[in-house]
Image (cartoon, rainbow, N blue to C red):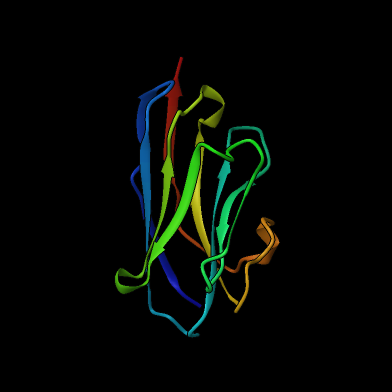
Length: 124
């Protein structure tokens, strides 16, 4: 479907910020829904934020008001700006994509293409 390379993770203290990036290439379709997911050790993968091909967005309640998802179509890049990070945000973060003309639900089974992940660690 599409190749995704995510990056930008790191270690920060609580209250800090990070910006994740996901570069998409080798497109098969013209329209995609994209999203960020995260998975902490011993926990299920959970949706963080999604953006439709039309720019509409949705967020998990735990990150609403702190995280912002956006995309630059000219650069084929998806972003996740994470502010006021908390220790519970510590996880491996993955970008995901699926051919779609609309905003997709934040469920892993809705997405067919995945990045390899980038680690975010927040210390208290």
